[in-house]
Image (cartoon, rainbow, N blue to C red):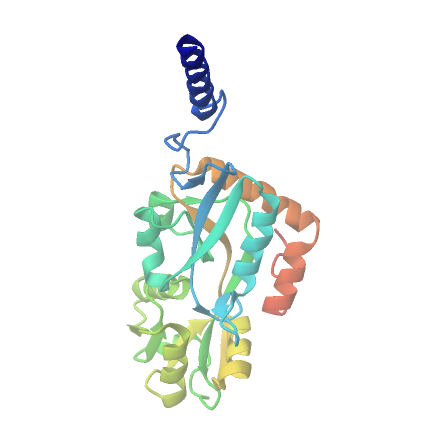
Length: 279
């Protein structure tokens, strides 16, 4: 009788061990992945942290209900739908912190209208398919009739966000043309810039027509664009150098979304025109 009981106990114990052992092909929590991002081992879906901001009108901002939205945000959400192996989650921060956060792996890619320049290209990886054209123009108070182009900014105070497309352009222009522009950097994104222009503490800024239109309607910015377009560069998402797999998949999704007309519709909705023309 005792032998029989011992046999049953041994059999149950063996069955229990078999049920708890890893099965062939199971995903281990220590498995490495090419993009160094966290992974949900239960679903086999890789979590990707997307860095963006909250103060770029129509691009990435908080609406009246506090929801993060805008052209870049909604485009990333559409890309996410195309890539079942990934789950995108947004992490918002000041624009000036995005590059450092990408470099230190706090985020996995940046969605914030990033233009290509030599410094960024040396350290990071751009995707290959552009998703917008970024037209920069001089912006002044609506009652300012003295500044008609960038040539009128000598000795003037021009406010821009540090490390932004506008800042990079203006710094280079100032150096290449000995333009004598007094560049200052905003402390609180677009709100700070609007207040400086509206109160006369700054003479101008560099921005886009669609941003100016939005701010005039939503924040009574009292701004206008003047002169010719200064820069009409294509913009991309920005990754770390080791993220070629993620870069490739994002580009594949973007190509599909362009063929389906989704990119065009989002551009028309958020930017007032189809800025994907010519890609």
